[in-house]
Length: 113
Length: 116
Image (cartoon, rainbow over all chains, first blue to last red):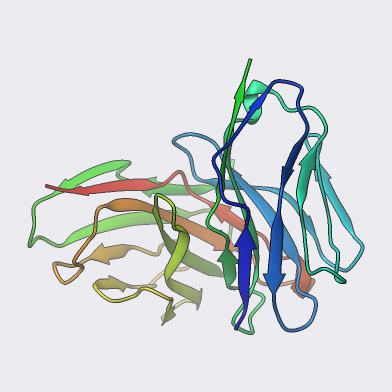
């Protein structure tokens, strides 16, 4: 069945370090792919998305490229800030419906000054 | 501003009691969802509804119930049959029209339920 595998955390970095959070999926076809972010004590919010193969989603300095060859959608940022400390979730539509998302288990990122 | 309002933010319940979590949206979205979040387990889908007066079970529906009498509202009842109800509950909505590959979930701020 459809599933998403996300790099386990926690991840601890110093400010201005490079970030990669891996995400791979198993699905039928080529679904849209999403990264959501959850700041402490809040709900999730969309960080970026890609709707077809080779698309690159970007927002707030974060990027992720839809790689159909490796079924991956890794999240990257060249220089993290303390304010990026949050939990990051990879997600995609599953169960044969574009309206039902499956989420990874989340990766906790802590950025130290 | 449009958004999703969940209430209460914090709720305490004694064992054996039912409790209802409120979720209201003014985004005019057709679909609404309830997720449960536990440490280390990510988000798990409890129930979802794509139109008024219709809803489907998600992956962990046992011990929960919902209703969808109005487009704006999707309350979740945690019943006494739910064996481990302490968790963070997230409500979300989605606009289901338009380009089918681009639908995005909008989340509320969550409700934290603690069973004493």
